[in-house]
Length: 239
Image (cartoon, rainbow, N blue to C red; front, side, top):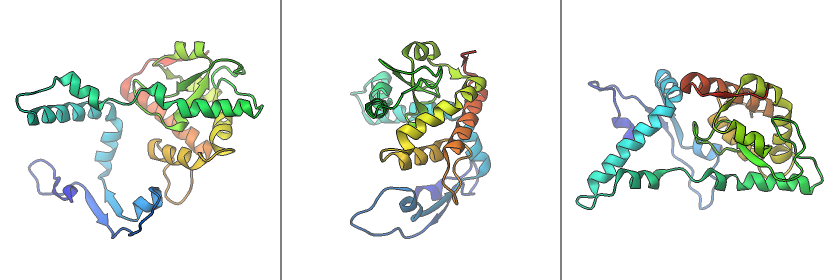
């Protein structure tokens, strides 16, 4: 296992400690949490985990840069440019990745249920935008919990800014209502919604319990504070 050979500089101390088990053998399986857990665990030192979580915005570009230089070194004389390699590694267009959420929002209106802008509370009767609550430019995340219906004009004003704590707190009930209508109360997306939240948001991954929508919102508030602290993002407020 490669993790066995990763040590601290100048030391023989192993950083990552695997506690592996023999995984189940089956012709068919579902790639979910219990299945992955059946292969064992990988223990990560607390201080390293905290550092990676806090500085993820800078770690990812550094890793990508090193990977690009490694790939270029393998090409020999026919070397593609740095930008060409970077284009091959970039995230999918966020507009493309919001299509599912847009379809779910349209399904709500098809059921004759009102669809509201999570920020203003206005009913969305015509065109609407799918807003990345945590701005995609700062944290490329297309998880369901991060995609919210909004008035196009407010989405443009918010742009790549972080919603202020007060704005997010005021919008809490509307966010929870959207999550309930789109993911929890109808359709097969509840498990995906909760799994994505547990994987990405602080305070929601508790092995013995399933996070509630309220837990997810609390994790969203914590993540907002983390991005504000670590990246010093400009804030957007309705007030």
